[in-house]
Length: 604
Ligand code: ASP
Image (cartoon, rainbow, N blue to C red; front, side):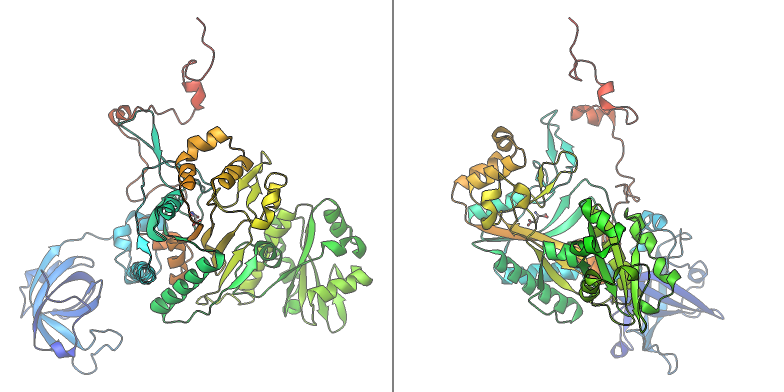
């Protein structure tokens, strides 16, 4: 090794030893010819003293931050008063006798030592510099520790770590596929896996009854702060299980990793909330339980309240719901109404409100509360003296839910409910098996088409598929979906019925999923599993608000890589090899094909 110790290793007990360190120059302080350097590496910082009397003076002049320096010297105790108790190496310093510049560094593109940083663009363009910062290194240490703990715990529980292909056929999870052309099979393309879903089910058929993998997945969809086109999952599958068994393994796993990484106890079992209850009470299928704010239904009272805005919304098929804000009766009218913009952004017409003071009810909704319906409203809201209530009414239930979701988030922040280091886990269960496709109105899987329907709803699979519940569960932490899974279909005929329900003809189903349908014929045990989003989990544990921070080389919102510039054009030769031609992105593809290729009739 070019070093005898790391920069975080030396203590008082090493005084008198000769050592060699290699590290980046963190800071340089000049004291009349004497130079004090903090040399930094992944393990810490050590003070090195360079004096013209002990090292060649020419080495001392051109030193700059972030150069890599190798120094050899003797360890000396720092004089009293010069010790630094905040530094693990703060009792000693290295008196250098040899100093060699082993890696020069020009002026930096940004001052990365200075805490809060310049724009993200520059930071991710020079990610290798950004990642040198101790706080960034701590995130990646946490990430590595998390993966290590997940693996260890699962191995102890009898899980086997198996790999699945990256170049494969579409494994649908509701996103678009990333496609990879095949040189050896011109005109044919692989898909990168959206998840190892089908393969892990095949492992169950093969008899690997407890499978795990930490695996990269790819989904071509619009990006958000908590989404990236490629991401890492902890993927699990277990045979001979029901929902409770998977949930129990996951709760044990979460309690273990949180304890190992933060020393904190997580209480199990986690709360279970049905999808319907989550949407009503928290206006979200991933409720943030750090706040106890709850939403309540008022649609049934709307007709009797005499408030046209409410009754009109319900008559048109929409809803009216409210949320009580404890203690907010003190807010000024201006403060109260300032939150209206949040719901208007979601398409709601406005935000109605009412408060209860010592003198009774006040605010725009108060005058509708005289009769029975009003009394019921007040009772249902739980409105106490000093509280405020907000109401959202709209002819679209979706708009009401979205508006209250954003409003609840904002209120929770404002009321100080969102403690940054709280960890509130819960399960959301009983999802519908299908959503309604917005354009075609036909059923599309809520999770993926391999999720088992609830046995009590099987008879509705053909007649009213949208009423069928799924044997699916999501793991939610602090309002983020960190995992999702289900009990799977293990009977071939049921799988065929579900394919049919989503509009796949038997031929299409066979051409897409023949290998799964075949496998289900050959002795498939009942099975189920889950996948956890490692990036999101690390983001939450690290206290970050974007997964980009915990991914070494993330993509931008446009799916580009600031460091490498990917995606890029490739050479004509490469395209030719894989049998592809690239269309002009500015024109519709069909207009660039010859009539023949575009499927138009050709004239003989
Ligand atoms: N394959 C699912 C996903 O990636 C997880 C699962 O159902 O186990 O979201």
